[in-house]
Amino acid sequence: MKFPQAHTLQQIATIISSEYIGESDFPVLGMNEIHVVSAGDIVFVDHPKYYDKALESAATVILINKKVDCPKGKALLISEDPFRDFNILTQYFKPFEKANSLLSETAQIGNNTIIQPGTFIGNHVVIGDNCLIHANVTIYDHTVIGNNVTIHSGTVLGSDAFYYKKRPEGFDKLISGGRVVIEDNVDLGALCTIDKGVTGDTIIKEGTKIDNQVHVGHDTVIGKKCLIASQVGIAGCVIIEDEVTIWGQVGITSAIKIGTKSVISAQSGVSKSLEANKSYFGTPADDFRKKYKEIASIRQIPDLIEKLKKNE
Image (cartoon, rainbow, N blue to C red; front, side, top):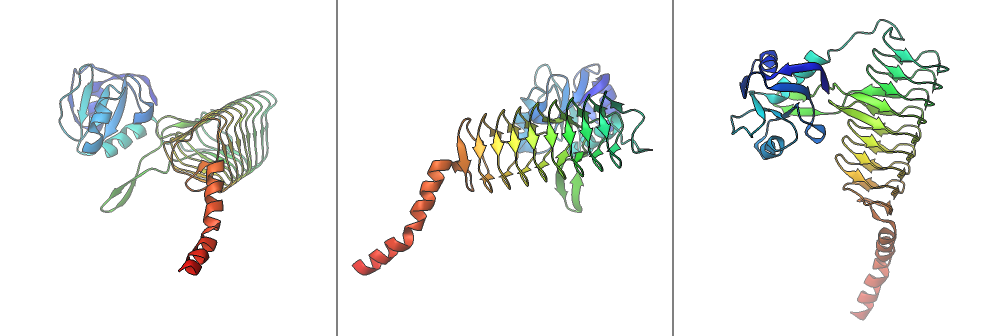
């Protein structure tokens, strides 16, 4: 998430009432999670295990809960609770805007786009030309939709990321300030749920077709011309490359990559990154032929046991 204008380190420190290490006029351009940071961004870290990763990332401002040596060319914001202060910054730069109608006055709707009754279109939404948005779709603030997109009834674009920190008193939510971006010629089935990014974008690229009842987690990027069948669950921060086919009821864990033109068979469980141009099956998902050989071998176990008994 980039700020509307550049801020200084001192200005950011004032917003969250924190100490800082670095020049007071050090430029701060935005804030992001570690997997999408770039120069000028703030990243937060609150566990020693991840200090080095944050300090060595592309981010140039590190919101951290301990005074450490500041890397050259970077700055630190010292906070008792970086998670809390990251939320404060999200609320400051992208505050919640109350809706006053089903179609926000700030929404931009393209030519020849049809919006059926009961659909909610939030603040600052952009929808391209020749789209068909069926009844009772919900499109949260700042969502961007390209041209020739079809969205079926009951689908929700832009709900919050499922991201919590466990505290003694319960779970503390990381506030979502990102967007959903749907590119041209995408079809979304009925009752799909696509979460916005925490600070970046959840993206579905050109030509992808998604069936009914599919969930896409925060900051996930789905490539061009993918086919995703019903009841697939995709966690956050997943990269699905172009022309991937995912059949029904597949579950995909967070922060992995699915290679180009992979095919994942129904009811598979994907727990690690998968190479391109291969077919996969099973839980954990593995090469299709290898997995079926394993199943065939397992089926022989009762006969082998009987033979062993006879030999005894």
